[in-house]
Every structure is written in structure tokens, then in C-alpha cells.
Length: 157
Image 1 (cartoon, one colour):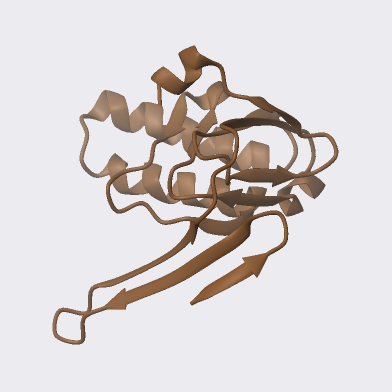
Image 2 (cartoon, one colour):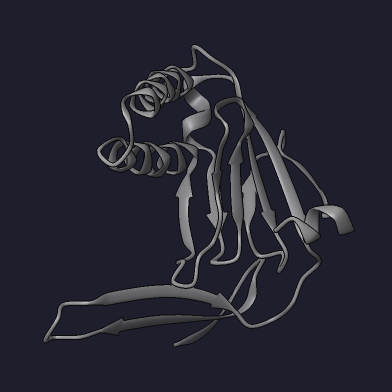
């Protein structure tokens, strides 16, 4: 289905599912092009968990204080969430990875989980960065800093 959505323009929603194997894939694709964009938002309080975040299927999310980078893969999906939802997704990924790594990395992962919880509770500030070469990701808060991605940043995505 194609819709004209404010801020995004023409947008297509897709849902692919297989009744036999139960595979499902949903996505929101923006049909127009925008300038490559980088958003930076400093999470300072528990109230910041409610700040709206849109990540397109091409967006890269970085939480530098924890050394976490979420890069898009071949089956990445775009989503609309809030800061807390983004942090919960990161937490889920760390929890899954704990089971597959050596004891030293498990310890480091547990430290990251504790830090993520402190960030969600507003006890530890952290910077949330979204970089999108297609310009469709966003952080909707007046304190979020928005600028065009540099050529160097584009090359690193």
C-alpha cells in the first residue's frame, strides 16, 4: 500500500508472509530521496525514553558510550519507536549474543546490560546517533541535532 505521509512523502508499506514456514517480513519503504542525515540526541533522563525515533531499513544506530553499533543488514526492517524501544532492541541483541561468546565477552556484555538499564532509568547520560544515507530516519525532539552526513561518514556506512 502506498501512502503520502507527512515528513516522509510517498511511503510504501509491505508485508510478506509464508503460511507454510511462518516466515514474515514487514517493512516501510520511502519512495522519495532525501539528503543523507545524521541525528544526535543526548539521553539525560527517564523522560527521554518517550522521544520518538524512526529508523529506516538503511539507518545505522550508534550508542558510542557502550560501543554498540547496529548496522542494517540485507533483511533489515524500518520501524517507528521511541528511545526506550531502541534501547530495548539493543538489550535483546546483547542478551542473545551472551549465549554465543566466551566468558570474557559474556562479562563485558553483562556490564553493557547494566549500563543500558542505567541509561533507561536516567542515571547515566548517553548519546544516541542515527545515520541514514537515504535521509529517512529521524529523532523527533527539539534537542536532537540534525545535519547532513559527511562523505567520510557515508563511506563508513
